[in-house]
Amino acid sequence: MDEKPMLPKLMHWMLFVVAAVFVVLGMSVDRLAGISYHLLLLLAIVAIVVGGRRSLASYKSSWKALWPLYLAFSGFTICLVLSQILVGNGSVKDFNIALRFQGFVVLCWAFSQMPQRFFRWLGIAFALATLVATVKTYWLTGGGVSREHANFMPILAYTELAAILGTLAVFSIKWDEAFPGAMRKALMALKLLAGLGGMYCIYLYQSRGAWLAIPVFVIAGCVVFVPSKNRVLKIGAALLVMIAIGTLYSSSANIRQRLMMVQSDLVSFESRSDLNTSIGTRLQLWNGSLRLYREHPFIGVGVNGYSKALGELSKEGIISPAAAYYPHSHNEFLFTAAVFGTCGLLALLALYLVPVVYFVLYGAKQTETGRVAAVMGLVLCLAFVSDGLVDVMFIWRECSLFYTVLLSLLMAALLRWRQPAPEYLGTS
Image 1 (tube, rainbow, N blue to C red):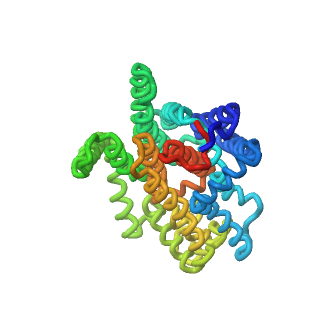
Image 2 (image 1 turned 120 degrees about the horizontal axis):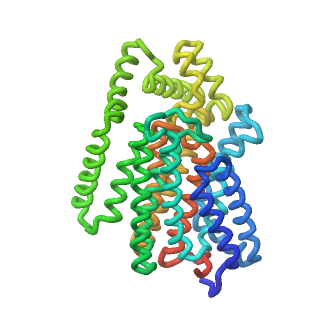
Image 3 (image 1 turned 180 degrees about the horizontal axis):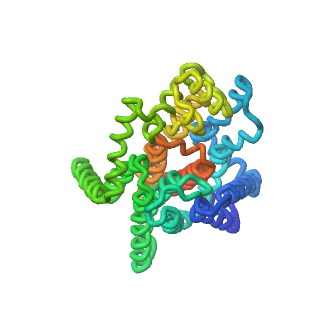
């Protein structure tokens, strides 16, 4: 490693400040996520060239070490190019979808040049973001009474992001050992409050789909915080926590009603007395998406062909006219398969699984801070997978941007704490 930092201190601070603004306010203030994301891209590109040959050589070396990651985040760019060539119903502005992920190839390198202390402060940003989201969710839902309040992004996705950020805040407690004792205790209280706030957001909105990510949070939490190498003990602790959460949630009359509606919706769908219930509509959309995938297996119906294709299925009587009005199929994998075919499915799986492989391999046999960074990265990926089973997270700009930026930050944190450190990193 070189004896001096790769980037000037001012560049470190600019990257961190904009990243912190993105994390804390990006999903709660309309358009701020897009503005701060593009500013981060600009700063990252400037960072690559500001150091001249040294920084350019470092960035080139990062490609040699991380090219599968960089390629994974380029998958949807490739899909869009192929779709435009073979299907042709897209436009230039549709490449914004790919840009949301493509930024990883410069952000990860730029963030990995920041000093370690900046990543410790990042845990505070996770906590503040969750608390802001908790207050806003309480306001949007009227304290859990309403599920229909307008927001610039769906409340479902908003609460799912809040739960993820709250979990990351709790895990970042393990990064705070370098702080003085009194400060460490204050930060622990703040981050635990944020973790509860993230779960409270899910509780307030009463989304059944968001509950799918809770086992991911609980299992990862037991891996990080249960002080034992005994896997049986960790599994037992996870089960106890899940039972406690289930007991708490089941004490709510609203949540019991939401669960009973699942059975009612299924009965209505099977008897065909009402196909357009919440569950019935999803089943129709899933069936329709599978039909579209079978008919267009390679590259799908195209980025702007989904609504028209649903309309055709409605005319054939495969789905109801009401279901044909939905903009997506309430499942990330089926929607991607319908729109981009097998190419899209491979791109989506790479977007999830390639980072998982890196977090597992790079986090093994590392210091505690490095291992925790790896677990946090795994939680981010797996929570998006679980949420994507009942929603299409990446159709929303803020969700795509948050996945890219948070994954860049967590991968950079792991690289910064990794021993031995990668050769292309400057000193902290």
